[in-house]
Length: 327
Image 1 (cartoon, rainbow, N blue to C red):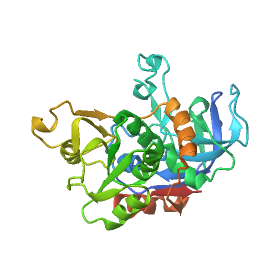
Image 2: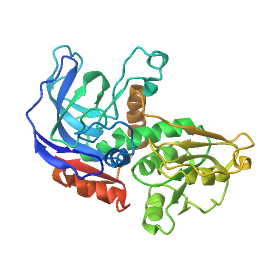
Image 3: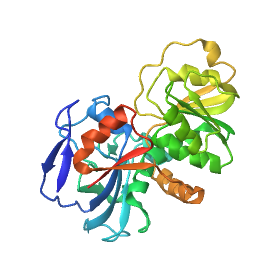
């Protein structure tokens, strides 16, 4: 099997040939059809997350077909198409796992971070944490839903039912969740880097009724806002843009430091919350919503061997939508 490996922090990935592993009794062996390139992968490569093991194969937006089943597995079949998301496993017995908060598990594993992921021709995954997918789905189109979509969906739920929704950072996650928000009857206001006309045009094409620079005030007060760019300086801006009682959700796993801001920006019962990881329930609910909403992804395919180019394009903001590796 072929894998693109991060051998040390802040280095380019290297193509390796590895022997085919044997799945444990509770694992499945999957032939990767597509793997999305997520900003979290950049955080892994750039050593911005703690305790990244090396070597590691990144990638956690995986779509593939099962080629082999562990001895104890029931309910899945060889040839079935499945998705492998960021949450790779949990302990199942900590206080969080026992209270429907497995995304906060004390001893989790994460695909492409603490266990090898999908920048590969094949991957091994825990069977209880894969998501069955329709056989007729397009793997390249579906791959970004496995994280950009799932995290966006969790953020949208955390944001509450407000009608005027602000999205700060219009990339893979925002272009998916904007479609869901419009389907729900919300109004979408998109915030991009200053002068990024292409991103603003893309946001309007995805249903935003207004798009402008992140430091611009929106034409109307927001009921809620989701920050999807890893830029701490956006927090005070988003708090100023939401109404009294409004909520700002930080959706990233990593963010630069939040600058000091006056208490007045938070006062009047504005709320600032974060989203961490996802649950298996998020996966099952979101894919049903995505089908109902008719979500379409803007995906740019790259050969597996061009993973470094895909990461560079994401880092430099050259992508419209999501990059997807195709082994």
